[in-house]
Length: 112
Length: 113
Image 1 (cartoon, each protein chain N blue to C red):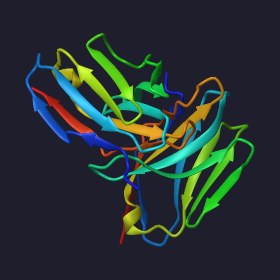
Image 2: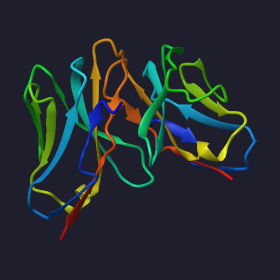
Image 3: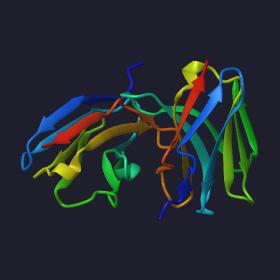
Image 4: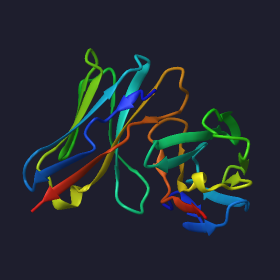
């Protein structure tokens, strides 16, 4: 079975640009999660969806961050405008409505 | 406020010996605990879990122990192998938290030959 698929794997862009990260969850999973991993804060939950509906976005750092899940097989995390402090590894994970969550291999984002 | 804590950032163990990774939590509402393993440039991979109704769960070389009164859990790996070298994350979920997991900051395990 295919796991969680994230794209791109690496993204380097200049400050102020819009960044869009993409995620395809495991088929049949109805919960989707976006995490950010940094040295300072570790692995922190940004937002999660159940059945395509955002349930908890309390971890989204600022209005510059937004996430959508238009259907059960696709989600995006957008940063506009991007800033150097947004540089991190962003992970997407999915589950069947209960743990465990299954993670993608992440997007390494560098904002110059 | 770090609700799940892994106080040892790193651990080095000889091949064949036991590795013990520790995790403490503060939230009494947590009732399900998981361990994930992470290799560089990959996402975390689920390893083993335990419900708060149990105090031990075993899967091959991996055993998780839960001490609810101390709000402490540990992961034992016996025998340790070089391929076990990775970062290990403890995570917790609980009633009222929905499907959310709260992660610790991780422990880097190095198994030496």
